[in-house]
Structure formats: structure tokens, C-alpha cells
Image (cartoon, rainbow over all chains, first blue to last red; front, side):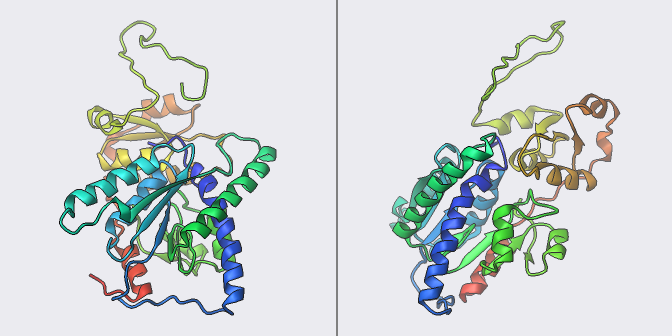
Length: 209
Length: 127
């Protein structure tokens, strides 16, 4: 599958940083209270789904296939510009939904696919990654302002669900650690019980893979 | 191969081993299904795809990665006896000494509990 697991961090990190900034401004503006509870009758919630690459995309797609698609719609999938596999997988899945639900007029309009600059390629030097991270972060901020997601899977806007990758057994990733320490995520999932013991505010609800 | 400059040969030294290679295949699952042993890098995609097919797996950890977490997953799954874990230096030894009978089958995970908690958060009924 994907060439490297650490790529997910490089894709997710700019999204995370911009989300932190925007969330901070938003929380300041609304003096603390987020509209987190929605009634079951509410229309679908705009969902941003952040795809890593390789195995991380498979993990996220396991969540997406299990989600109730009418509640979490429209869905905006984000993946790195240099990752030509992840969006393709999401597209194949969304097209399979269209075939199943032809009568319901549910179409590909319910799913949009967005590519994002990557903050660091595998093997890229630490010095040059500062510039590429800045570029990737501004691009991520632009995408989030444009989409204004209500739910972000991976990392979030008004409701944040962060799922630490199954590859993280003993310690959190950089994105995960930031979200955990700053208490940004509404729900923070890990996929190994020993990781939950180390980070007690995390939630262990089994493995995705 | 990949971003490197090394080009492998399709014939082994004495011609007894049939070698094939590709940079990318959309149907890697077919190759895994046909294999009796899979040797792979420690990426979670490759690991779980192989385990899902119930094939014996040796994972070779890439030791050159930034914030090396690849070894975490490989070591955890090796401790649980779902696969064998090796480094480029110990791979030969691992192949010689491994006993495939000692491996435990991997029971795949399930996204339902996570999705059910997300739904609960929004006040959606669980179904």
C-alpha cells in the first residue's frame, strides 16, 4: 500500500495548525460555548475527512464506511497533492454509494475531493520543511475557511474527533500530542489500551484495522 | 526502484529463483493471496492487508524515518505473535529460524464502537 506511514503527519499537521488557529479565534469570538449538540432531525453536517496515505487512509475509510452517510453529508475529503492514491480510494467508495442509492438522488455532489500542499515529504530536510510547512498551513487555512466544516474527522472545527493511528502503540504522534495536551479534541481516540493508560483522557474503543 | 536509483534484476544469481518487481500495483492483494510468505516494510497498510489475508508475515523496519513509530506497531504485533519482526541485518536469520506454526491469527478490528461514540456525541440515536 502507501509508501510510508509518517506521511500522514505531514498531511495532517498543516490542517491541524490552521484548525488550532481558527478554532482559537472562533472560541474567543463566541466566548467559550460551542454548539456541539445537534438534534437527530438536523440536516447533514458538513464533514471534512482528512486522509493520510497508505494504511492511514485505510483506517479512516473504515470509519467512513461505517458512518451513517445521511448524517455526515456533504463530505469533503482532503489528501496531499503528492498522494495520488488516497483520494482515488475515497472516490471509488463514494461512487459505489451512488450506484447503491441511485433512486435517492444521492450523488457525487455529496462528496468533494480536495488536495492540499504537504508540510514535509519523507526524507525532506528539516530546514526546508519550515518553508513548506508555512505554505501548507496557509493553504490549509484557506481550505477550511472555504469549506467551513461542521465536523472534521481526523481533526476538527466545531466538533473535533481525533483518531490516533493504529501505528501509534506507545506514544502519540505530534498532531495527536498537540490536540491532547491542548485539550482541543472533543473526543480523542487511541487504538491500543496501553496508550490509553498513558493518556487517560483518551478513549479506547477498539481497533479500526 | 521508487525514488532510488537501484534497478533489480529479474533473474537471480543461479537462475533458480523467479523474480518479478513493480513500482506500483493497484492489485497488490492478488500477489498477497498467491504468496506463502510475505516480507514487507512496517507500514500499517501493508501489515494489515497481509494479516487480513491470513498470510505469514515478516516485517522489516525502516530505521531511517523521522520520529520512528513504524517499529512500535511491528513490535507490538510481534509480541502478540501475529508476525515476525526483523531488521535488514537480521532478516536472513529470521527466515531460517522462524516457525510459522507459532503465529496467532489476527482478528480484524471494527470501526463500529468509534462511530457509535461519534453519533452519541451529536445526540444521534445509535443504530
